[in-house]
Length: 238
Image (tube, rainbow, N blue to C red):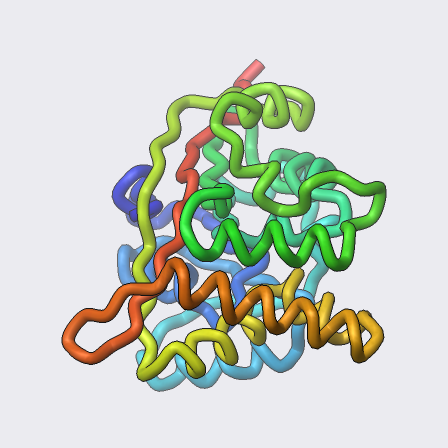
């Protein structure tokens, strides 16, 4: 969906920041962009390299922190980050880093979870149980459409356009949905790692209830939805 909103041109130098196991980077490579991808997790990067090798994709994989990207200013024609910025301890710094490494006139493409849907509900539960640094409402606050323009402006970019989209995830059962979402949603995984046993048990119960309330069944699969805000911004040319 983000690729449809801001498709790269052939030969563009593109960065996928916070690439995880490589979903976006592989899509960018398929569209003949010159792709660099970075993530802070060596485990996810190893998985991404294996996927790229199997697909025959040429991608420059780097280990790097989204809040301190290991690239020179204006290194890329476009920078992409799907869902990662809002999971940083300092999302405003992550946005500023994305703008910094983008050339003047280049694009910044983002996907951010909103508060709607099951994923938004789970992220809010995590923020209540294990408040993020400095307080606040956690990652979903960064998916607020009416605030994104100002936040990008503070980072040095101009919002060109945005739209909301729904992501549907299928699981074999409600139990599998709970296990997978608790593992892949960073704030939830972090909360369970940090909370005392009793508080972690309380959070787990809340997560199970939320999934049960939000999930639907299709073709014997448990379907959980999340809403994302897709946005394209530009670093001013002047």
